[in-house]
Image 1 (tube, one colour):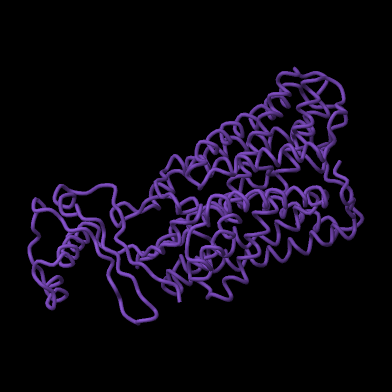
Image 2 (image 1 turned 90 degrees about the vertical axis):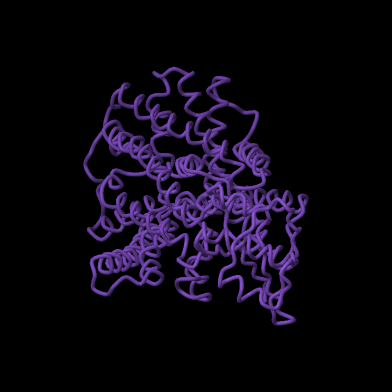
Amino acid sequence: MDHEVVEVGSSPVMSTRAAAVVSVPPLQLQYCPNSKMTRSVPLPATDSTTPKTPKSPFTSRIMTPMAATSPMKKAIVSMHGYLEEVGHFTKLDPQEAWLPITESRNGNAYYSAFHTLCSGIGSWGIVCLSLIFMWQLYTLWLLIQLHESESGTRYSRYLRLSMAAFGEKRGKLLALYSIMYLSGGTCVTLIMIGGGTMKIFFQIVCGGDDKSLSTVEWYLVFACSAMALSQLPNLNSIAGVSLVGAITAVSYCTMIWVVSIVQGRPMGVSYDPPQTKSDVTRICSILNCLGIIAFAFRGHNLVLEIQGTMPSSSKHPSRVPMWRGVKFAYLIIAMCLCPLAIGGYWAYGNLIPANGGMLVALYKYHGHDTSKALLGLTSLFVVINSVSSFQIYAMPVLDNFEFRYTSKFNRPCPWWLRSAIRALFGCLAFFISVALPFLRSLAGLLGGIALPLTLAYPCLMWIQIKKPQKHSAIWYLNWALGVSGMVLSILVVTGAIWSIATMGIKVHFFKPQ
């Protein structure tokens, strides 16, 4: 059985009285499974200048067997005075202080906005402007509210929240594999996008076709850059990286749609739906597109982790700055992606390439009549954003690896092992990107499998944990959205498999284009 530590949570604002009383560090009560009793960790005695706290029934009941002047009594009295300010215990697992996601809890609304904005911008279609956008924003709010339970427990990882809602075995079965392959698959996709864009950038800067490095070698250059940056210790330490990634994401999105509209539509643009052999094929193609959009809404597996980097108390819960940062980030995302989707559809219609989206369309149709400096800057911004996003999406996988080590040895990972784990993950992602370069064609299938993480599970977890009154409006809403999300996931996976079977994909191993 793991040791459980009950620690007084920190509050960013304390009154003068509370600040004086808590001159002694918080008392830790540790459960010892071998002796089946609770033992206290000795704390330094306070000096004579520490203000005395009046006796209360709480302290008198606990302190009856103890001497009046014992350091233990002083510590518990101090703790009691602080609890009057905080109002509740915050249950903290000491292991969380050793893991990269929760190693630092000094995050704020700005960090939340940077991380969310950097990881939230992807390639979306026009359909995201309506129902699905609002749906996923609502489930994001649910996750933020579920981060902290009434008992003080913080669920700083999506997997922990799933296990608390659905049970340990069922929660792992529903969430673990989806979270891991979603995070890992996103990192593989970012290597493909970032490495391929690096090659294009070099060609634009040097002029003509570059023959010095192959696509695989550019993937390796990008992967090495990402691995070097991943050596930053925890999620809060990459807040500056996320800020740079967010700025570059907003910049390249704006540049793409502005240039596309200014340069005008190429010849042969059509807005008619593509011809299909049957109505079933057409419906399955639409469902496959919804899966691709769902893959873009992949940031929900990070929201609890981002919120876990923030301090929290009863007076200042972390959900307040987290929701403030998310609202700001999604406002910027909407301002970027609405014109990108509308302007891109107007400019290219059915000429948008199947792989690469508007960025490839910009190079293909306007590469000859657009400034090289502008095209090169756009490519550079895409590369920077890809490197920055890699750090955020890799964090759940890295955190899980280190969790295995700390659980087994009951100590934090040494620096050399942490570096080795991150380098190993980067090498694995690079190998998959080279060995399976057709994975980008499976985005619809992957998005359909991971869709419940975004649209269904948060609603069902809210019902299981919050237990709203039956037949109330919130009860009906969450059941309807949760069931609809599961049904939509099944339909999207079916449509993606049908599309792959009927239209096929170009399967080529170890030959990235």
